[in-house]
Length: 285
Image 1: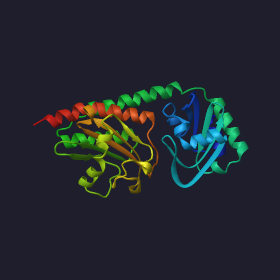
Image 2 (image 1 turned 60 degrees about the vertical axis):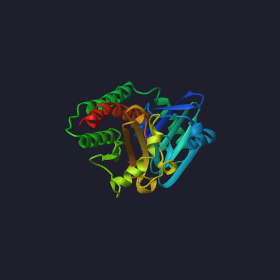
Image 3 (image 1 turned 90 degrees about the horizontal axis):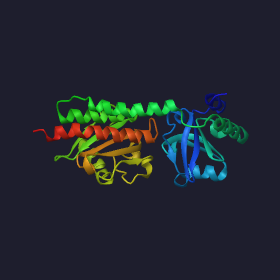
């Protein structure tokens, strides 16, 4: 039996096998669906994840919502079931998993744990290639003006992180906004979008900011708020201490999810590669 067959028994779209690697730290080592795609890229502490804490304490937990909610880390789902097995937490996601009986859930979790030992080597190599390709795309860009380059960088960052929204905010003076050439855009003026993004400037002077659920954001400013359809956001500074500007991407409710460790690495890599490109154009007469 394969992991895919275990998932099919429960009609699970996603399966995560989280393995304890410290007293209060679990890493996703493999799975099905996003559990496989995010292998090696979810590192969580149940103490800071209420849902996982309840799975760990109760042994088995089901959750069912009318709309997708953040379950743990970057994972969003409308229906989930979690099983605690010693040094493992197994999470099943997908329509129908919350109505599966206890015995079948525990049996499926035991089968999944028995099949997984570590993050597949091929997955680790693929992740490294993804980071390298993100940097290479920026380095090979050839654009004649600042606006074109900034928009292309926003587009590349959104694509690399599978986001629906991407933007480069340059502090100038004057302050300027450059949105990705594709994807979601709020029904608002550039000035309104700039006003919503500017509060992030101080927050990212020390480095990358990740909001896995904008419903609890410290920056709930419209038209880029949870009410507008953006569920998760990642912002990274451009230039030393963010002096040049900010690169921001976000996921929408159309495909709700947060940001894995790989996504965060990609964002940092894109930002690092973008700084010399943008810096040269900003300083050009």
